[in-house]
Image (cartoon, rainbow, N blue to C red; front, side):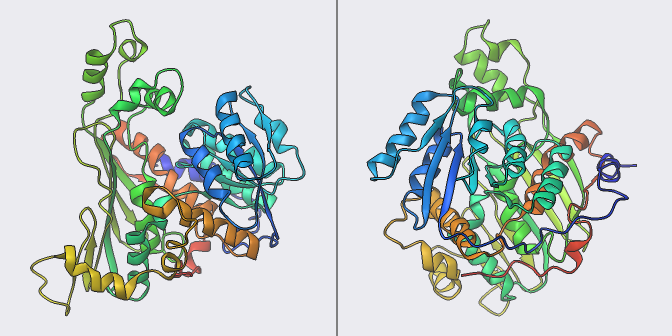
Length: 435
């Protein structure tokens, strides 16, 4: 029996009465969204600053291991004329005191990967909606815990996959919903980004904890930026779901070379071997037979790329650089790209992007997608709407990492995906092109 199946059959809910699904869950509308933040380093501090630009948001409290980082984000609030938020820290579990407050509706979590799940679980158990950075989990057990806790507490649990709110990704989602590419058959997503420089963040910062993962694990450690949009195009968890995965990794070379070149022999980056292959390639097949290639590479000398390819019976979109071919719209032997894409954007730009991206307060990073994501999150909470990404997406998209690790260990053997929706995917409609 494949490892993924064994985990699925062993989850605590198997054989018991199924809890009420969180699919299309609508929480009680909030007139104002009162936020707490756990982790305000490079990523979390940006979330604080952007949330201060949104209508109907109050920053109530901040928790961080480092007092100077917490004070920096608190000052961002007072600089905007807002009340100074309460600060919790510097202990590793100081955030738990913050979660006991009854004046916080939702928590945004931007901490090291291994902390995401436990913090989100604590947030939901304390009556808060949980919004956590990617990936949501690092083990299948954590995936199940998030699903079951969200269902039990009736609290949202959203993994904040910002790439799903990029202009190109939103437009392609709109094109998929309009049937421009016909029946969807195949997708490709990736996170290819040379991040070796983060190894110089030794004591604090992203590299201080992220580098340790490369020493301990071998698989696709960061799958969701490329995968999330493709999953939404295909209606994964909404009419289809991931069925099984096969994964292989290359040898691990360049981080060892970087450590030897840039750190002394007795440095911790030189004392522990790097385990993770320099590039991992995983292939997924869905229950409906669609295929997806997912690649991961955070160390090789190569330009940034998320691939963002979706192929249907009538055409294809490819990213990096953006290009398109649609049957009946010119030759299928050559890409339309560059200046030739303007008519496509004029015709198919997503209504959400057109509504939010041009707002004067949009100072969001990554081309504006961060602000659009946060705006949409708050809009849904204030209007009692289902979130675009739910706990089942958080679990399924994050499950790539532990399943790829298991597959790599077994020479590419296929690993079954648990059905985190417990069958609800069969009757759900694909995510619409919401405005």
